[in-house]
Image 1 (cartoon, rainbow, N blue to C red):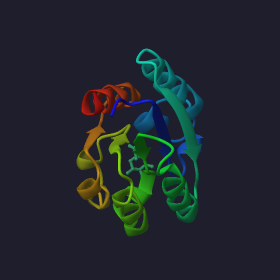
Image 2: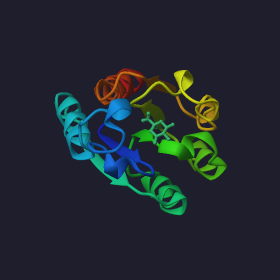
Image 3: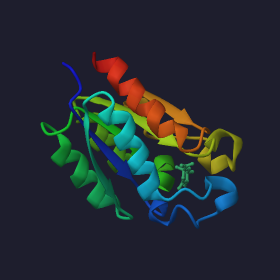
Length: 146
Ligand code: DQA
């Protein structure tokens, strides 16, 4: 089935992008990243919705609500990436493709970032390319669903 609607989910502390550890995450704001996703998606006639939450339960509820509403998910779960089995389980219930994105390259950072508990339930992961990762994630979803 062709892709028509993408949901972009951001987890904790990513609302602070732009000012949070700019040496790691750059100075681009979350709103700017969402605009990049929108531009990449609109080139394919795909619509984008986005949610940012610092609360695990809200992210779980957002994933549940996406079932039957969106065809693909792009998720940067922030630190939840490394320990949220609740988000893992919720993504497992989502029938469409899921692309995990990280601005930084967690594998090159502290040990606790080396494991993603989401990795087993996503279609693929894009890490370490800064904001470019979001446009790449859109292209991946388009490719996976065409
Ligand atoms: C991050 C990497 C995570 O380890 C970290 O907790 C974040 C951001 C990234 O985009 O590089 O909040 O997901």
